[in-house]
Length: 55
Image 1: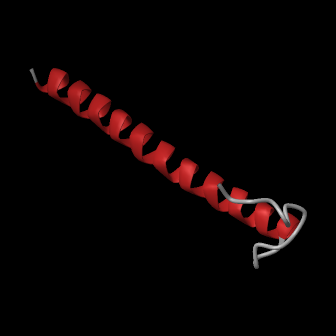
Image 2: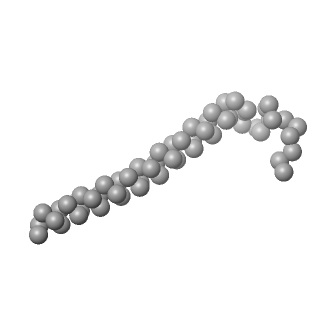
């Protein structure tokens, strides 16, 4: 029975690690997109998209 508990604990750890890892990678990806956008368009909102209406 001890081996089964250890396997269940291992599976639980892998699932938690996968979920948290995905959240971390998504956050890093969003930060990279913000950085790339700021480099391309500037941080003041002006840039190539100037003159376009927001909605």
